[in-house]
Amino acid sequence: MKVLIAAGGTGGHIYPALAIAEKLKEENVDVVFVGTKEGMESKIVPNAGFRLLFISTGQFAGKSFTVKARTLSRVVKGILDSIAIIKEEKPQAVLGMGSFVSFPAVVSAILRGVPSFLHEQNFDLGLTNRVLFRFVKKIFLSFEETAQVYGIKNYYYTGNPVRRSIKKAPEIEKKEGFSIFVLGGSRGAKSINKALVELLPIIAPLKNVEIYHQTGEEEYESIRMAYRKFGIGGEVFPFTRDIEKYYGFSDLVISRAGSSTLFELASMKKPAILIPYPYSAGKHQWRNARYVERLGGAYTIDNGDLSGRSLYEKIESLMSDRERLRIMGENMGKIYVDDAQDRIFQEIMRYVK
Image (cartoon, rainbow, N blue to C red):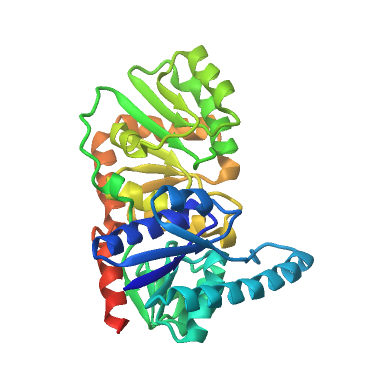
């Protein structure tokens, strides 16, 4: 049996796809990915040991009319590319992980009569999933309430798959004091970095505070020097492949509100201060953040209101209330579905001949 997975654009689409691919591989299912040469998938997927075939496509959301017109021709070519791949690879099922990368592949599967599926990582449906969910066998949802918002009947609640390295991470013995893990994504986040630099002189007088900060490459050196200037303990690095280690160290996480990050936090029951990326498509990070905030798992700060002082006010109140931190972690954990990959695999198998 073979399953074709269309995933790309951002890590938020790619990493859950890889988690599903790992499960399929365990079940002796051959997995082939489709994506673009320009996207992050061009490096991440082959490095994970899976075959990646390239198609042409482009992004519509937030683009000008001229760009959309040019993109349309690329999408048509992408559909033709995908039809050729389906003819050649003969998959028994096609799974699209949302975003513009999955549109040509899923449309091609529908046209060819191959059982097709979608997965939505966020609370709000992305454009591709909004257009296509009615035409696929099932759309897998990370948040069950999404079905009510969009009136979806053909859904299956699975949660969002989390990478095995995080799910299986050994428990790390907690250090004394208070530890914070700061991440703005693989490339960092300038507004979060700026706020942390503002926070350092404010938080420096507090005892036993350590900060682990993923800065991104561009601002790494200047931020490292700021930490050294104020004598803050912890570690500053441009990027880490051992993210589970720093989740394990932390009492509190400061991050954006992409779905993959939220479900990683949920899997480890980590309370958070969330700063939604203001330019995410359809402002979906806001909906993600507000949902977990309503559950009591996080605080949300608008990117426009973010400063060292606004962070300090939240951090200081939590440092003195460990029980509230514990309860926030438990509430964050409520969105986690431990067997997300299993649910997706089993549901796909129901439709495969």
